[in-house]
Length: 316
Ligand code: SF4
Ligand code: MG
View 1 (tube, rainbow, N blue to C red):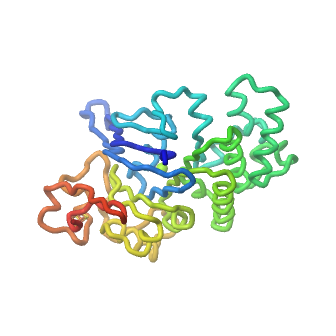
View 2 (view 1 turned 60 degrees about the horizontal axis):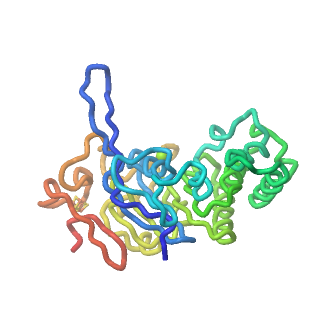
View 3 (view 1 turned 30 degrees about the horizontal axis):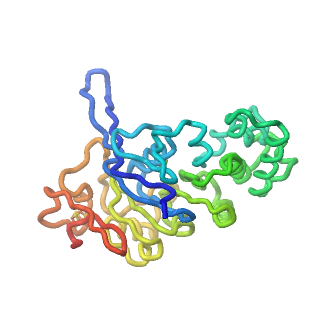
């Protein structure tokens, strides 16, 4: 079966300058990532901030060109598609519905936007499709006439989801879609996304720093660390039998979360991963509790098996 999303050796390097006279430094935000997502499934992507999750999402959405590598959506090269065709196939839902919704437009006009941007669609069809999308996400016609500021955070995220669905895409890229919401509202939005996926046969790439959220929605999980996927497994296997030391540390940190930080304390000291300064050898070695002889100098290669992928010298 053709994967809904396929990513082949994807890379994105940014040249950043910290001050006028400082030499540019290379940030390898995404550093050779490959995976395939079967249609109708959910690939969760987890990792701390700065690991490259959002850069990955933006490349798959066509918002950022890769430095090298390739994105295929529904078997077609993303780079060979125009914007309108891409929009019909793949849509985003971002973290902060407040900043991603135009405050001066009514909900129904916000939801209509992707449809109107396609051109050549009559008003009656737009109205019908907008009503359908609003109903799908549990918003009334009356709420469609309001402005975003007149809605709650959860309702605003429903608007963002309706806008993503109005073109009836096959794939939705969710980048921290519930991170700005209260916990009780988070569950409602996650349930809605799950229901929509089943009813409409959608495929999700679901990005989050929150492991509990990913466990709830994902069929498979990829763990990112400094631009690479260091482990990928079926969701249940990953949560019950994490194989990479970084995944193990992330899961352990869920039991002792640092309140208010939004970033898990992995319990591995104060070393923060710096994408402008990727360590040699295994990029996780300065923080790894199981570091041994080859780790500081030799980069581990990915070991793949029926169980998934692990990039660690302890494997194989
Ligand atoms: Fe730890 Fe070495 Fe495995 Fe890297 S390769 S995760 S440093 S044991
Ligand atoms: Mg991000």
